Image 1 (tube, helix red, strand yellow):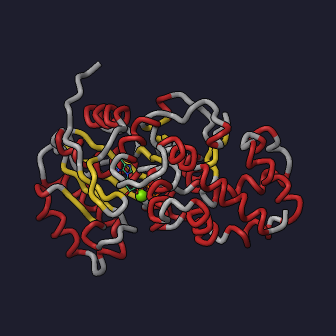
Image 2 (cartoon, rainbow, N blue to C red; image 1 turned 90 degrees about the vertical axis):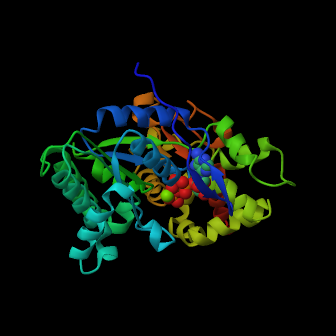
Length: 347
Ligand SMILES: Nc1ncnc2c1ncn2[C@@H]1O[C@H](COP(=O)(O)OP(=O)(O)OP(=O)(O)O)[C@@H](O)[C@H]1O
Ligand SMILES: [Mg+2]
């Protein structure tokens, strides 16, 4: 086992403050391994909305830079424009030069990043290059996700010049793209889950009192940092937080459109997400499953082999948190939102 150095933890926003990246020890070890070996394929990381993918990529930048990589990072959906494209200062001139070649660099930021990576390979002698892409599938559209992954694979396999090591990481919360990208052997796909109990506790400690007991926050969020943030912002009023999720996802209309038969299946899924696996042959079950995955409410968690995951896999089964062997509610509060929408539809 190679020794892994202790990397500085970056500071990231959380619930209106800045906190140090917490926990995710296993993920940090995995990033160290990737840095040492490079990636043979683009590594696509999927996980529930708000589980901490963006946080992980920001920390990843620090890890790779520590290993001597020149990093280019894009987050097309970032709130602040200066966060859309970030890079190691060593490649500043290359980035500016490439960006000038695009009439509208921000409109084609994914292409800009890929072009930067190939220019770095051409301009520097056997460099280490890391390309980190956050939420790019949402930005380029599902239809083009496969094409972009192939382009990234080409960068690894047919580089414009010799490189020492290259790492390509793509993060996405989109359940549907997983199916599409997963069809090809163009990428390695790994899933990421919400935070484990201890890490969640550390994050929770950053929030000011008064606040409910940790156990309660855990039961509601299942360790999802964004769900925790939502609860905090709703003044710990669970009903309000749930209503917001219903509204944002237009869940009541969606549940209504499922029809009586679909809604009956959905009621069963509340308690037992695994019926989506066991009764997959049933047409209604199949439709409900596709919708739940598409809407980022339920995730497929088919295996618990640690190599299929970034950081630690979810528990084998945890009915209270809505985690089955094959499928899991992304968070308990999302399950609560669906329950509320079902009640509104009068079942
Ligand atoms: N390990 C961590 N340490 C500290 N803060 C974290 C950690 N993981 C996540 N957070 C914080 O929790 C919030 C949600 O995480 P983040 O935005 O990274 O999730 P995400 O998976 O990228 O979500 P989305 O699917 O919406 O893109 C952010 O404020 C983030 O900074
Ligand atoms: Mg994100």
